[in-house]
Image (cartoon, rainbow, N blue to C red; front, side, top):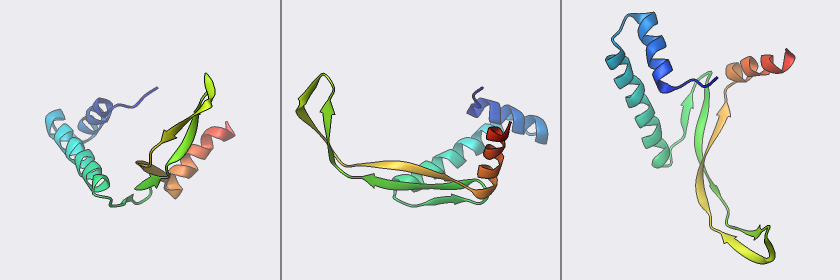
Length: 98
């Protein structure tokens, strides 16, 4: 199952009695601020959830499996890395126990 932004909005709206439009605006604004912070190179830390940060992957040489003799240069690029917080990691680990 996939949890979508729409699912979050419906669930939060139902639990708190707020309009779906209001909840959607808050969720969207939150995601916008997280993306904005990451785009400016900042780290986003959400306690008990996790940390988002931008890492720069080094340039490297790849190989085309159809033509292994040909080198393909792969440029350096920025990637978003997520490290789960302690509580989230503990909840996810429960899946492997089942």
